[in-house]
Amino acid sequence: MVIGASGQIGRPVVEALARDGWAVTAASRGGGRDDAWGEGVRSVRLDRADDTALAAVVGDGCDLVVDVVAYDAGHARQLTGLADRIGSAVVISSVSVYEDGAGRGFDTQGDPDGFPVYPVPVSETQPTVAPGEASYSTRKAALERELLQPSGGSGGRLPVTVLRAGAVHGPYSPLPRELYFVKRNLDGRRDRVLAHGGRSRFHPAAARNIAELVRLAAARPGSRVLNACDAEAPTVAGIGAAVDAVMGVETRTAYLDGPPAGSVGRTPWSVPRPVVFDMSAAERELGYRPVVSYAESLPETVEWLTGELRGRDWRTAFPLLAQVYPDLFDYAAEDAWRTA
Image 1 (cartoon, one colour):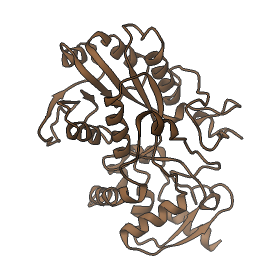
Image 2: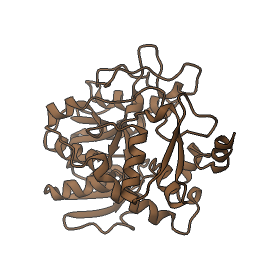
Image 3: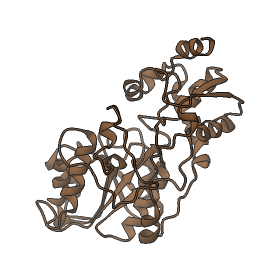
């Protein structure tokens, strides 16, 4: 069973498992209303927060549960409480759980000197934030702790692979970072500005590569934590160049040596220090090899974004992105900066 089957990660997970011969139950709020799954996949409607409904879908038992939308300790207890009916689980967490040696992490980025100083690359042994309910990161940490404690939480011992995903990219994203470059190209903006010299690196994770990790973990049940990212962590300048290549345009880039000047130079990847993750554990434990590189993944992403923008304001198409980055396309500020 795949919980959250209709989302950005859930779709390729369902497809990867079905190709591998699994009989898949694709569970989502819509119940497959907008999905045309192939042979070997059945759709069911599920409210993730409804304990009774989840137990009913699991029924007498299933060999594997993949939970794409688990966010806190309560969701973990739902799964561990069904441990006697589940063979193993794969649960998606986030690299945002990591903190550096000074207690800085994703939650402190906006504080003075609050951006974390991570080793390059970050391995799974890096300390994590304290579990709690205060933020997305602390809730994910609580999810992990509840799933992985030796007692198996409120139920029996459930073998769980926790995948800490990086900056997820691909079609159906509610937070498509690539829109920063795609929309500019569609709008005819051939000049761009990048902060931090264009050298920012925030490790991406193709949804298809995460699905491959799920497929491999499903075949090798166990209790483990693994980073889930692409093979490479390109710079933001490199990402822009790769998008340009897909769209067949030529652009000019100006660079700020330091942080953004207000909104100018700010992108969804703009970080002052590298955020790069070690994938050697996944390679060693699961035999993981990415099924797609960042550049190879871009054509389908660009095509999907172009279609989603057709006849729609970007804020309507991607309300979460607009909430997180409200000034992502402040062209007036960029023009003023150039003429200053």
